[in-house]
Length: 56
Ligand SMILES: [Zn+2]
Image (cartoon, rainbow, N blue to C red; front, side):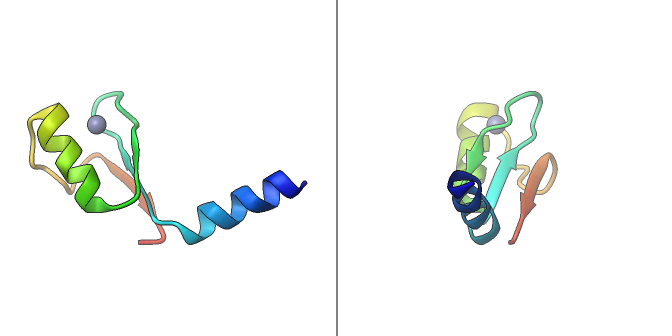
């Protein structure tokens, strides 16, 4: 139960950006980090589409 409480705290207080491009699904702590990953690994600067996030 303690583990789940901690997990909920982290998920509810930390912005998380998920790369939904293709089947990548990598997690990043900020939009800037995700965009940098897009440029490097997907050769695209499209930072608006294929992003899953919450608590932004
Ligand atoms: Zn990606």
